[in-house]
Amino acid sequence: MTSTPSVRPEIIDFYTRSDEAARLHTNATGSLELTRTRELLRRHLPPAPARVLDVGGGPGTHARWLAEDGYTVHVVDPVPKHVRQAAAVDGVTAEVGDARHLTATTGTYDAVLLLGPLYHLHDTADRIRALAEAARAARPGGLIAAAAISRYAPLLDYIATTGITEPEVQDSLRDTLDRGRYAGQRGFTVAYFQTSAELLADVTRAGLANPTLYGVEGPGWVAVKAIEKYTGTNLLGTDMYEAALAAARVADPHPALTDASAHILAVAHAAGGGEAPSRGA
Image (cartoon, rainbow, N blue to C red; front, side, top):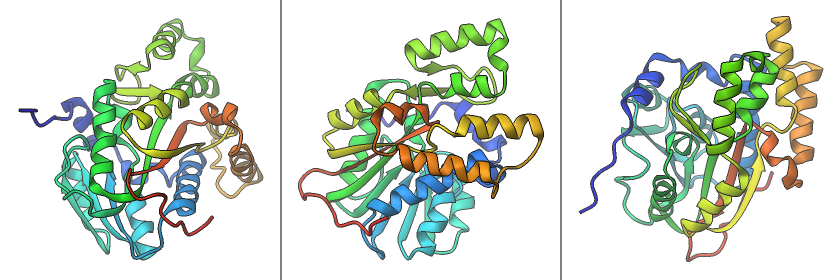
C-alpha cells in the first residue's frame, strides 16, 4: 500500500513564521507575480461559476480574486495557518492537505491550480504524483495550471541584490544550477527550481494534454528588484513597473525568454475531454 506523504517540517515552519499573505502585495516584484499569474489564469479558466481547487493555495491570495470573479473555490494547503487565513475569505472553503494525496473526489473540479506545491518537491516522482493527483481531481478536459520557480531565479536574484559577489553564494548557486535543489540556506526554505524543459517533461509524464508554458514575471523583474533594493522605492505604479509588465506580455510567445522569469506557469488539461472553453484574456 502506498503511504500518505508528509510535508517536511522545515517547510511548514517557514510558512508559519513568514507572512505569505502580504508577499504579493508589498512591493513591485510581488505585484508583478500576482498580476501576471492572474491575467494568465483568466486567459484559460472556464467561465464562472466553475469549481476551482486551489492546491497549495496558501492564505487564499488567488482564491480571493477567484471568488470575487464568481468561482467556487476550495483551498488545500499543508500549513494550518494558511488554511485558517484562506477559510476566512468570503466564498472560499479550505482544508489541510498535501498535493500528492488529495481528498477530492475524482473528476469533480473544472480547474485545479498548483501554484506552489512543485516549489518544494525535490523528487521527480513526487512532482509527477502531485500533477497526476490534480488531473484526477479535475473533470475530463478540465484545466490544470502548475507553477514552478525558474532554475535561474536564484542567480538573477543574487545579481539584482549583489549577493553573488560572495564566494559561498557562488558555490551554492553552482549546485542549484546543476541540480535544482536548494537546502534553504538564505531567506527561503527547502525548494526545487525547474527549467521550463523539465517542467514540460513533468507535465507530459503526468499525462496532461496540450501543455503551454509562460514566463510569469518576464525578463524585467530583475531590474525592478534591483531598483527597489538600492533606492528603497516601491515601484508599484511607476513607469519602471509598467515597463516590466509590458515586457512580460511581449515575451509570452518566445520560449527562449520563459526561463528568465522568476516563475514559470504550465497550463494544460486533464485527459479525456478536450480543451475546456476559456474566457479569453
